[in-house]
Amino acid sequence: MAGIPRWSDLAPLLQFDVEFNRRRARLSRVGDVYDLRKIAKRRTPTAAFDYVDGAAQAELT
Image 1 (cartoon, one colour):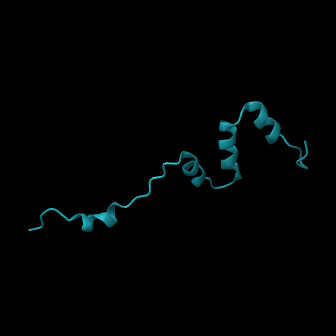
Image 2 (tube, helix red, strand yellow):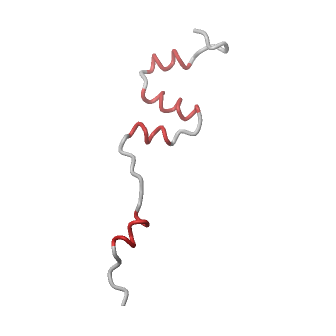
Image 3 (cartoon, rainbow, N blue to C red):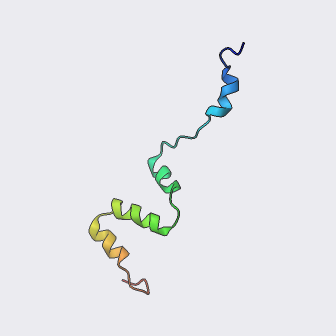
């Protein structure tokens, strides 16, 4: 008779890592600099983002 499984038998199957730090969770999904740009565009005031994002080829403002 199988019965109810013991916790020690189920524990390895139920391990998961929940990230409660939203910033760290968001940054862990970043694959390249363009993903960072999307996050910055949402989080930064428009004028400041456009000023920094609109740099010239030489990256001088």
